Length: 382
Image 1 (spheres, rainbow, N blue to C red):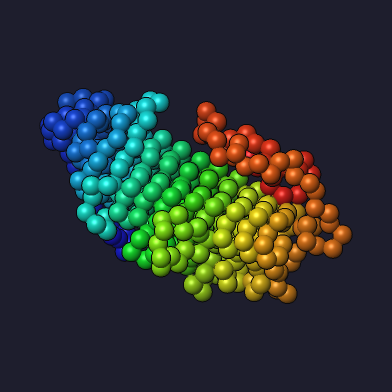
Image 2: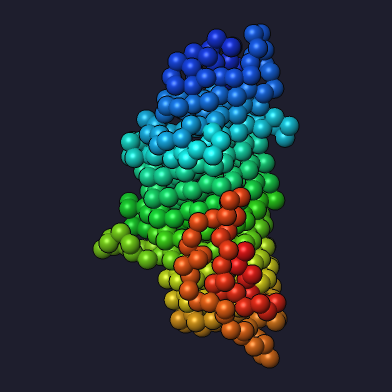
């Protein structure tokens, strides 16, 4: 599946058509009375890959798709251009607390596993794995809520926001790991990519972005501020796939690139054990704000902001291979551990095992003392 921008179409299903689409292929539509095809709310429960494909393709404002537990192998990409509304969202979710894996290993080469280009979607409590290309992509979407997802072992970036008019999306409690693009030797597969587009009000919180071929987070050529908070990026850029021509970068947080100017907001995050920088502007000249972040044991600089107008305060860098920070004359740096007169507090723990453990029941990050200090500097690691 590929997409270069917004494409809208409207679908209207009769009751008979809806039942034929879903119930006949392992699904059942609920909450529809005769003669109410235009009703504001419909629920469909699906239990086969074909029913899942059809339910996504025929969703409209107010549709809730509940996926029964198991592993699904769709024959085609899951895709929709339908719009929800603020009061009648389109929801794709696991059924109750059941575990759902949507697996792209049987898709044609180059296919995305799932892609939407509509507004006001909620996608939650699902795993998207083993796609030939991207795991999950939202193109030019507004008002999306993407919560408690896993995107793993895909053939390009795990989770992507892209396109003009990408506004007011929330990515919460994402685990994105093991993504690798063999066709380009690891150059492009990030944990989360917000790329090639523009928009306002996009927020990433509570993510773990790890063991990806390229970067943990990549904001290449995205015009408009993105807020990133309470997110961890670690172990990115290592050649775990034994590719002799491997070209992954390995930044924890890549905050720009491609000539785009954006003033991102980066608060209370941590980057460790990445093969390049922990946090980098990547030549973004914008006034990105970084406060209370921690960079630990990255191969190059903890913080690399050599050319832009970044504002850095209360950040902590320790144990990075090249230097704590590279900060240019256009940036403002105050109250960070590399600034004169600021001490580096000791960590309570440098054992990361608890950070790698299960999330809490609500999907939030696990409780850990790793990289915590108790001082009002660096990430709180929660």
